[in-house]
Image: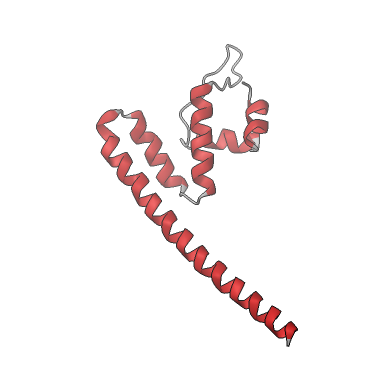
Amino acid sequence: MIISEVSEKYGMTQDALRYYERVGLIPPVPRKPNGIRDYDDYSCGWIEFIHCMRKTGVPVEVLVEYVQLYQQGSKTKEIRKELLLAELNRLDERIANLQATRKRLASKIENYDDLEKS
């Protein structure tokens, strides 16, 4: 799959995809003999994973470290697991904070509704 197709499939710019590869967020993408990127299932799997993680706020630095560790093989699986667990805990905290904020907003809106009824 060429970069324009991958860009459309994942709703990302071509520049973002090139950036992901340049900074090490995804492993190097295979290329055709003419130098054009040729995204395979493996590359697309990484793009999906990284795109998902970025949407949840996982820092680029953490993801670059994760990819580097992954490329070192199974000897790094515990470190990778720890990285992901730390991000899961951070995400759980964010979700709890968002839920608390949502509850407070809903309560405020309810107060306005109650005022209108009076």
